[in-house]
Image (cartoon, rainbow, N blue to C red; front, side, top):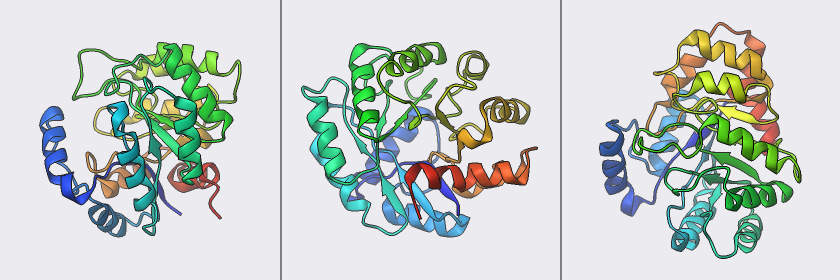
Length: 268
């Protein structure tokens, strides 16, 4: 089973406009049209069984719209959407309760687009409560090419957050995207490798050396690494080929490409 743990789609009515705007911010040509149908076509071509969709709530007022779309698109075979909320929401507990009631398996947080440092109290409290409710928490980590001026989740701050959360909850359902911190991988090795968390490898293959990727996998543990493409900003087929080309064992590749995610998502 192959599971892509990091993808993005948008409602058909806004997908074209949204990816055009985001693509101009990061100077990236999308690999799909960022719709559910486009993602499913990509999955079929690449041989991906499930894709996890990670929506970002950039303003508290978007909460209902984003999560209604997440609940609806999760009905599509092969798509598992997480929910989303903003750290400056008036009642994070009620919103997390609602996400859980919708049957969504996790949440996505993006400190740069949400203009909040990952070790601020509002994030620590929110993440702790989400983990206490057994929700998976996926966090954008490291630099964002569209918002490069301030990095709101660098590895050192991520470690502070982890240590604070661990005072109250287990971080065994916590994911730091982009191999722990996009374009900050020396710091990932220093502060995060070996910590009790998952990393997904999304949008990393073009920037990180294979030697450093293998080193992070081995030092962190292949059983805590997840395959992710960041579709539409990178290709699922291309990222699969990248993982298969790494100098790690076939058993490690099997774990990364699906077995770890299958366990985390509790899929039969």
